[in-house]
Image 1 (cartoon, rainbow, N blue to C red):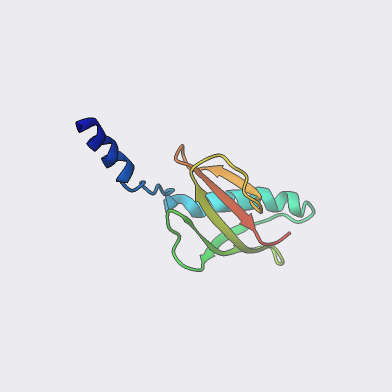
Image 2: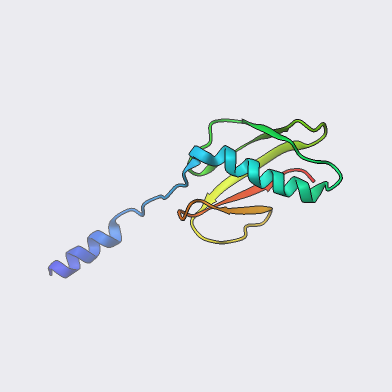
Length: 110
């Protein structure tokens, strides 16, 4: 009977929600943006300056605006964390979260 109780405890226990580490998300988005924008507008050189977050990013991601020194470049984006290597619709860049899932980044421009 103890095996049944142990199985019930495992089955009833809530699943842990894993999150990505958002501490370096500015750097990850900045690098992904520079690569994306270089291919998007090869005749204009991106000069990433910073990110203006809509609200502080969490382990699940965030939204904001990329500020670029080159006039006409940059714009809104979304970053989402997921646990597995997938290619969600709209993600232009997928970046490993240091072995703890992936950041899917959607740029709302180009």
